[in-house]
Length: 153
Ligand SMILES: [Zn+2]
Image 1 (cartoon, rainbow, N blue to C red):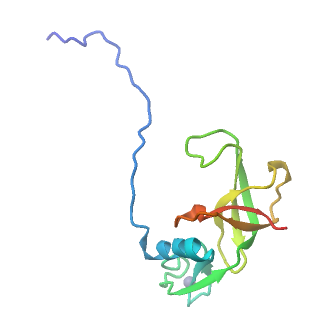
Image 2 (cartoon, rainbow, N blue to C red):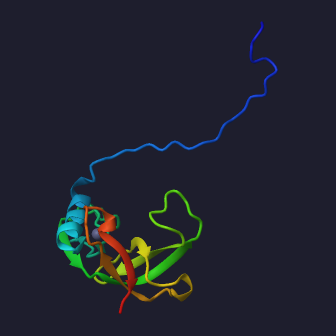
Image 3 (cartoon, rainbow, N blue to C red):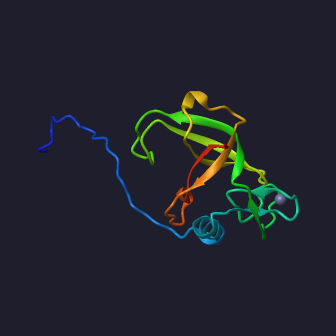
């Protein structure tokens, strides 16, 4: 059988596909984002059985599987639990590298929120430092309504 591809080396082309998509954030995340956008307040959900407060909010308690039906405002101030510095300008970065990502345990929460840290140099950042949310001037109902966290002054 004759084939026009006979004796042609099979080549593999590597690329990436960018697929725009959207989905409903759900009742719990929607309430969280609306509070950020309209009131500049950070809300968590509290488990009525074990007492843990989750930020970002969870619909059900992942510890004891109880539906979280209680909402609680937490502080915009928290403690840096851990962090990393992204120095490579990846396409997915929301801003110019280097970008510091940290896990921040807000006062009143039992979990940590992942977010960007700014107004501090990577060499000056310390685990345990106090950080405060800086809200964006124009808020759109997403996690970047908190523009970033910065050292508490
Ligand atoms: Zn629980």
